[in-house]
Length: 144
Image 1: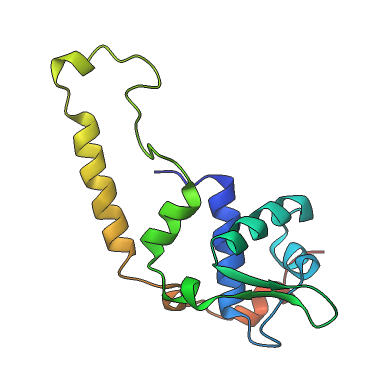
Image 2: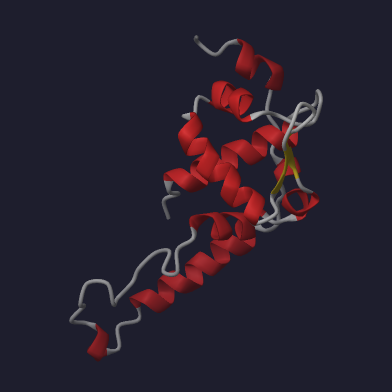
């Protein structure tokens, strides 16, 4: 399974917000700068995360983006599945007409079982389980 760019960016935002210590909230500009993600891409990500209640957004001077309890308590497998937004994450036998469908091919079934095991394995972990050495240095050493 390959994560799409949207899922990749979303996970980066959620990890950043989960590990953020000072002030607990961040602006779009701060996240864009720290994670090196274009602001336009970030707007779409944050809108989706807000709609799904994974982040909380507040406008104004004391506003910003914060991680929600829902995101903090969600298993990583459920989170990835939500962010991927794909009905057929590995194989879609209907997308390109497959000659094996009428011959009882079991490949899709095998892949679906493996995908569910993959998600179950990830669901044993939360964002808080992600530990980084020298978290503070990640952003200090970023090349400008």
